Length: 481
Image 1 (cartoon, helix red, strand yellow):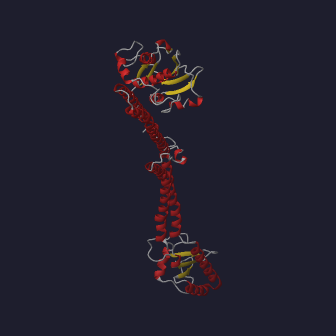
Image 2 (cartoon, one colour; image 1 turned 30 degrees about the horizontal axis):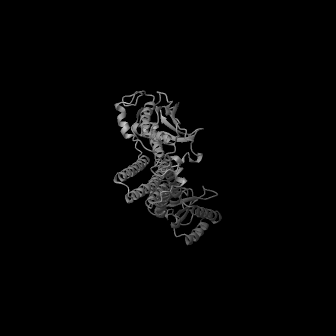
Image 3 (tube, one colour; image 1 turned 135 degrees about the vertical axis):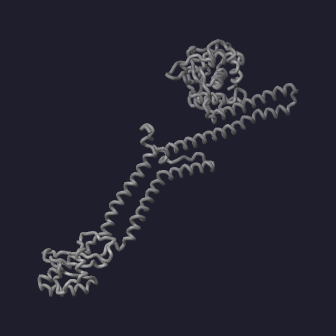
């Protein structure tokens, strides 16, 4: 595994790793520190026990110094009333300092005496015997006592073992689960709530910035969810708007058909009227469906090398034939070196829609010009007319579906779909389309990816239209924009 294969520094992996490492180190520290504390509590005498035994040793020393054996006997008798255990006082030769000699069994026990600081063994049978030297003169004698049961450490050994090995690790594990829940489940719950909100139709629901601003994978997922939500909302809104506009646009031709059917005109005129209205409605439905498809279809289009000059010659030939314009009024200033990458039919239809829009809005005797220049890895191509332009506030509105700034009736001068289709078609190929006013008219700018590979077998070249252009003529059907 290489270092380059590791996740980025903002990855969720590092957060989880830090959380788990911190948890493991905390458990190790707890096991060490709390274990030592519990060892002190369960194996060593408490401070209270040590203080009591040292006080007994001081009392025994005082009794010996004052009255020798008689004083020790009196003291042993008084201690017997306080402690229900064996107590003795011995000298440095391990002989009893009282008037009562040690039995053989007691003498054997003297060989297993413990100090106050010694740990008590869990495997010792019975209570341990402790030796506490006299505080002032340890060589003079010592107190020997069988440890009172109340001083035996580890009374709560099982309880503390349950606390140490069960409750406390469980609490820390619970804290770990809370951390993992806040780190992983809370953002996922927000994603689930957004998905559930989509089922209830409000597509404008967005995730909180607390999730989308995260730099890890969950933040990326949240941003992807928001992008998907925005995309879904815009698509549904567009389709709903298209349906509303389509139903509105169809009312006019349907009304004309009803009027024509109820009129007294001849059969020939009625057929012509029906044919025109049906053709118009067919174009309207096809253009609307194509616009909806361009907006929803996100699969990449196959691209190829396209020469703008050759494509312009093919489109102007058709436009001159249909509009009656002479070829001299459709001028091209784009050099033959202008090659772009794109989908031929889609780009041809976009440029055709722009050209027919310019022809329709140009006055008698005006000129439409195609220009272009190289812009880094792109070609900037523009089409200018002399139709007077549009208001600055309408430069973006002209790309909205069913927008007709000239106030024409549906079908008379177009349906207001051509520029919308053109922009979507250009954007699908990685380009952009925008409008701006000039001194005499409107300029539509197209930015396309440049192709430096030269001429290929599948490319449109600058020669006169031949067999390779015939399929394009069929697909790029002339449209009134």
